Image (cartoon, rainbow, N blue to C red; front, side, top):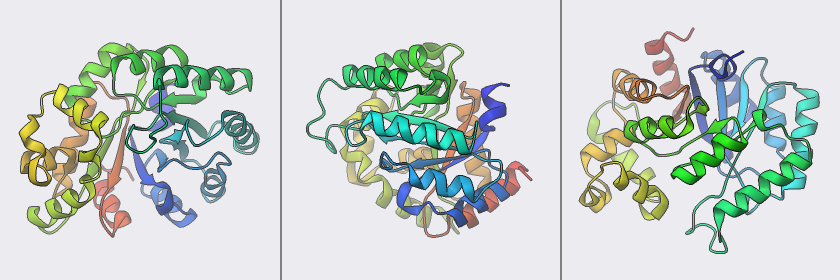
Length: 276
């Protein structure tokens, strides 16, 4: 079975506090293959169990468990518990976060290697885990020690480059969408959401590295940058953004709906993609 068979071509990314069994069930009903739980879920992974029990087929992946806040032995025990009850339906995504959120973060690549060593010793298979990865060294580590990479807040140029680094390893970037009555409303919602990320050096530096002018981050982001990072305002624009990542080499794209009606947006996108 291929990774696309496992994950489906399209998934949905939600921040942890938004995830509940009802939302998970709706995501499955709309035909998405994977639900990604972001927001650094705690090591007990109880939210993963809750949504697995509320669904029948959809894969659940963490996007991501933060290695600085979740102790690896406990995470591994949680993985084993979940795998025993729901075999083959959970993939453990881990990552090192960013300097501004974890000031004690030091030597993140070495810390990721150490964390993976513990997961190895505790019986978490390499093909049931993946890494958040933006830079080349982390992408290489994802290729060597896991199923692949889950980059966040990237554009297709990064996806194309990541594919070259990863070879045939799994690649699942995240893409935000904002479906709204008009572009200005959508951009206002997107700018509000993106503001915190434009203050995080790892994301900004990665975007600049792949062609975004530094001036485009001023005043909440240029229209072109906001539109690219948070496709809007129509389902057709969202489909085009997803296809951009797929054409650049992604195996799967995790859609993050921004706004107060995530299920409504996902339903419109599902119709456009003809998922059900």
